Length: 121
Image (cartoon, rainbow, N blue to C red; front, top):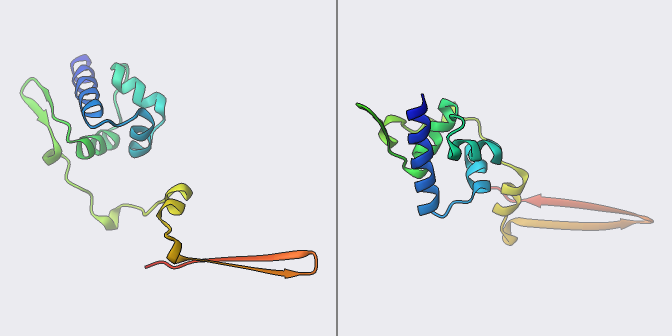
């Protein structure tokens, strides 16, 4: 188990450094906390299998332990129908273009009525 931790730690450090990925960005991509990413990098814990698969596919990790090796081909992309579509509010707002946004403000006495519409393609 220690060899696997060292192999994952070493390869993850290499990939994140080479691809200039921050700890925060890596945590966001993997869906884990920054502390979890730190523990993977230090080799004090192993990522869950699903998290490991995402890391291997995203950063093209190549892990070798003895006669076993893992790379992108070991973890095919999941089918879209099996993956829930989730987007953070930040991602949603970042994806909106000015042409797709309509803002309407109406005043009724002391009250303001604001309506926002977003064109979704």
